[in-house]
Length: 119
Image 1 (tube, rainbow, N blue to C red):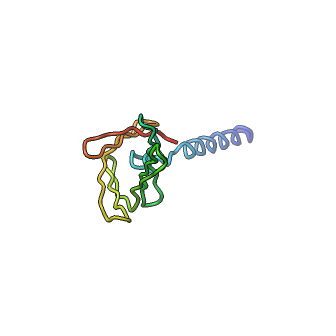
Image 2 (image 1 turned 90 degrees about the horizontal axis):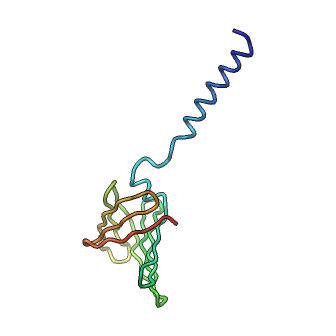
């Protein structure tokens, strides 16, 4: 085998290895999909609902049309279908279900759901 063919084989092998390692994604499951993104939706009444994650914490906030706001924020435990926010200001546990659909997540609390979209 000539030097050129050996070099070409080595370069091709290197390209294949680099291609497949660079294609690996950080998103491995729906919990990752949920926490690696920020989510937001403007509701029919003009209120803006947003959900974001930082390390082990979640923040669910709502900005009301009248300019006031409310927030649930604290330590978050989650799996591929549910998450629980331990609100640090009240000590209340808020359990949610969720289902991620590409750029949209449906969040369910007390049998009521809302769709949020990636920011």
